[in-house]
Image (cartoon, rainbow, N blue to C red):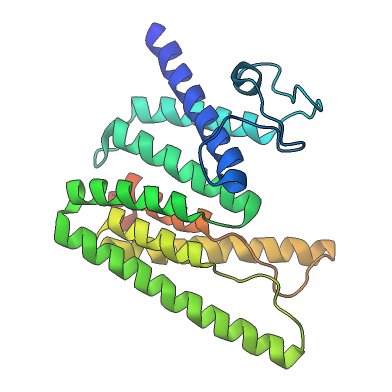
Length: 255
């Protein structure tokens, strides 16, 4: 029972950390004292992290996202503790879950992947990649991930601008951002060579399926418009984490 409570607390703290970094990094680009996203006044740590979780100045309550993220991390930590991935082990998988949680939340809410976050990911990816694959496969995987996604980024830019010129309609958002290119490099370090190829293929398949469902829903609701940008970071993360956690199953299915 005590072990269960301890793991729940660890997962809860991890969720709070992801929420905190997802709040402060997009606004300040650095780790600072918690502040209200509405009025930007600094918040007491106890108020921000525990209770009442609303601004002491303007009274604005934090979003429902904090409860969703913390709940997910409690469940994920319990799952990782009871069934740790054979390839990673509990601690490495736990650190990766925290890092990628920050990437996903920021990308979903702000449609960007911050360079400081990519830099931190590069350090984590290099350490874990060398441990898993050795130095050469890790470096080649990182370069391949960056290079492949850079090519897709440039291709998407040319195609979008070509269509915009034909339709005489400005493109407000890119299908892929340069942050996605940086993230693909991080994932390449993590997956190594040639694992990054399968990771990107999985990301493209997942992204294509989700995007198709999203477009169909918009069409049904009559809210579809051209050049709607969908954050791609979560799909890249899903492909890579799926490969790390369920590698044997995916390889057997695809092979």
